[in-house]
Length: 434
Image 1 (spheres, rainbow, N blue to C red):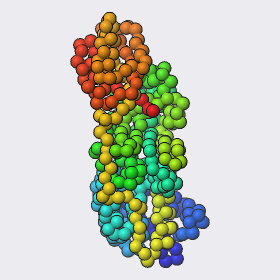
Image 2 (cartoon, one colour; image 1 turned 90 degrees about the horizontal axis):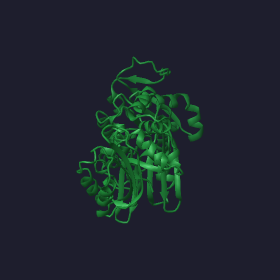
Image 3 (cartoon, helix red, strand yellow; image 1 turned 180 degrees about the vertical axis):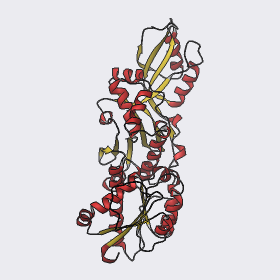
Image 4 (cartoon, rainbow, N blue to C red; image 1 turned 60 degrees about the vertical axis):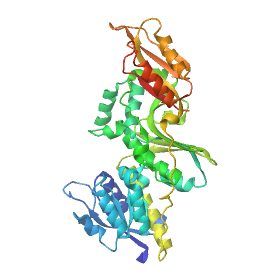
């Protein structure tokens, strides 16, 4: 930390890495004014230097060899922006073992290998920060760790994936089918050519695992989170939701009970009066309830070069201040327990209100048969809508909203209902936000 200078190395100069480099180079004076530290971007490791990036890198050591950066004793902080599992995991592991602090936006890696990396960091008295892994430019991890540190978190509800939120917004506002809304998202650059991770709910589940780890102070196994995507939602469902005064969002849910936590990602009907219902297009939002602070909401851009780079540099500045304060002492890693276990409540044991959409034959007795099966499983109907038949096959959509019921009971009832020959198999079951 000679002359209050912090030496930084970046692995990967793609979209996010370029954004980080741009801030460190172009906002250098601003960062020094606000932090009292001199941030020196010393080395960037990137395999493809042929791409035009509109950056003056004349004062930066540019290499194709990441190990040159990782083995440099002068570098204090390594920023990993290549994404994916390998070689990102190996690079981060080596950086930590070489007693370098690491900042990353790699949500998939933190969600699945975070505990292993965190253990390496603790063993080497260094830190691993990942603010940018959830919510892009929204300071949600810092908000949970610092701003709301006095609270036990009773619930967290997040719109954490910009791609799915954009698709659902366009379906809601422009009466589009799912495929048309997805195509529009791809044309606008909000969806990848292969959008599977987003539309399946996997990306949001990665982020929920990270938020849950912070909220519960214990690593949450990503593969234990219940996940549903949005591919089964039609514009008919959007229209029905609107008729009930609701909209559909892909919601990541953390809810604390006395005997454990409820973790889920799935499409959810949200009343239009709730703040989350108004979060449109590619934006993200996280609604947090703490036992002392009550309800708070974090809102903003969830991805992109500039928002994500902004979050990464925030971590760099935090680390650098701590380096200055703790120089010569054992570094104190941010506290997440490596031994504490949190019980995950099985989704079958959770109670929800439900939206059910069936396609049935338009004939007497159908509704009474369905409601009878639901009643057998202690599920009561709150409201119902049935459209008139217009097709040659004499099938019509029926939509039911239920009162609260156990997931297990609903699963058993649906299994019985779809065995009737007057019900098509393409039913939809959604939860209703409470």
